Length: 230
Image 1 (cartoon, one colour):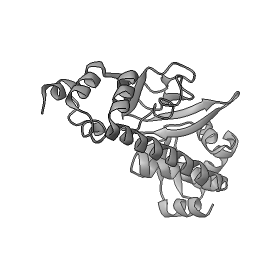
Image 2 (tube, helix red, strand yellow):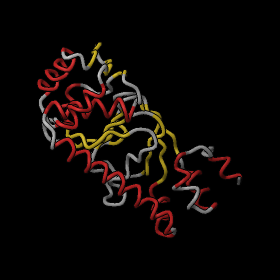
Image 3 (cartoon, helix red, strand yellow):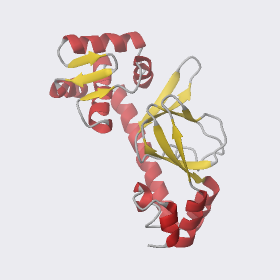
Image 4 (cartoon, one colour):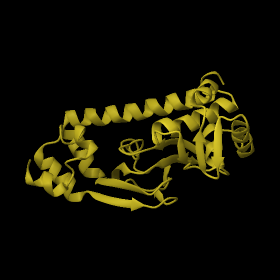
């Protein structure tokens, strides 16, 4: 373990597969020297659409939404959790961000100098391939999510979102919904009124218990059937 590695305090960083296995010591030292960790509170903007790209960012802790402004409403692209690359969709295609990122929970973002990352990518093929793999995985997941949602009816779409938060984000059937009914509607391209109505139907059918923002999934298998066949 070299001194620069210790100074960076990243020995447990989940980026080690991408960075520490593919980046030389001197390159890692440059990354660590310019690394910043920023904390954002719930509701705070992390990235604003149109602003200059200065950092390569990944989410160390928390939950965020990626979205674009569409006039009178937002278009949610995806949600991102810990260890996701929240800036990777734009950093190599433009000089300005094409979307915004907002914290849905208190979040910690690791920021690496974008020019340093680009320079290493241009000189280190293993590192560049690692970045391409991460970008492709994220793009594939977004495409899959959009197509999965579009082929479902309203009940299936809302079931999809609830299962995502229960299984993928919180990994338990009871959780505080981190998004509003309006944000769910933006993600599944339905009206807020329809989202409220279907959640109420799920509650009356005994599939959910709802206490304000707290959701408890009582019948997960039933909810999954609605998701799969809705």
